[in-house]
Image (tube, rainbow, N blue to C red):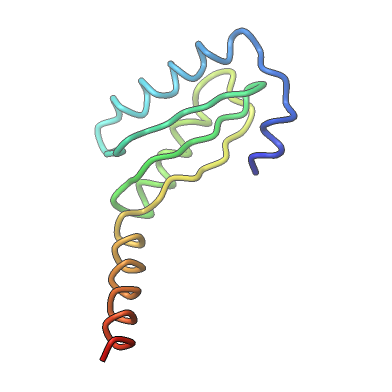
Length: 99
């Protein structure tokens, strides 16, 4: 995904678009994003951070594409419950290996 974004030219309004997207995400009543990161190149948004649920991940992408000027979105938001599950599983595997 990053290779595609790196080849796209950066437009002067991309910085303004990134700020607009971030404000919309942070002000949305049903959306809670931790450490949001928004990068824009040629109108394509790369979205990173953490959300609590998969529904919020989808909602965030919907908010982004609704911003005028956004041509596409790469949604790299991580769902916290998925991250905890993977971490918990790796810890239990490590524990069983040590036994």
